[in-house]
Amino acid sequence: MNNPYNQQQQRQDEIVLDGTNVTTLIVAGAKSFAKKHKVISGSYLFGILILLIAGSGTKLSIDQRRQYDHIMSTIDLNAEHNASVRYGHAYHAYKSSKGWFTCDSLCQRNKEHMQRAEADLNILRKEGYNRMSDAKAVAGLFSEVGVGEVKDSFWEYFYAGKNFAKRQSMWDAM
Image (cartoon, rainbow, N blue to C red):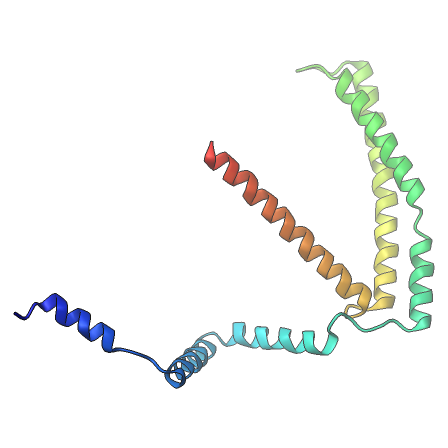
């Protein structure tokens, strides 16, 4: 008895790809993708080339390292920390004196104090960021410092995304 289901099953069993056919299929698929998506393919190959050339970053010369370290040492972290603490205290005082819908004279004074502390903090941070930018310009984008910073930034964002996904999964489970 000829059952059409058995014939179809038999035909599927007969299709066997050897290694050369699979390789040819993969190469043809890659060529087709590269032709359709030239920008993506070119960017990918350019990125691979940069990684091969730069690797973990070019080593800084002694002069570059000295200049980089000198500029980074001029950043006053203690002043920025103290300004941040002052802003935190001023912010807390403002929030403590603020009513739900009103802000009396004490609240207004605390608000002005908080805004001054915030402005001072922003000035110090901007100065520090500018000095860091100058130091990074001395080192260069593809230096070990620049590549290390990009790697650290990537992994920081990766773990932040991973933690976000875990939190969302927890909420989905609830």
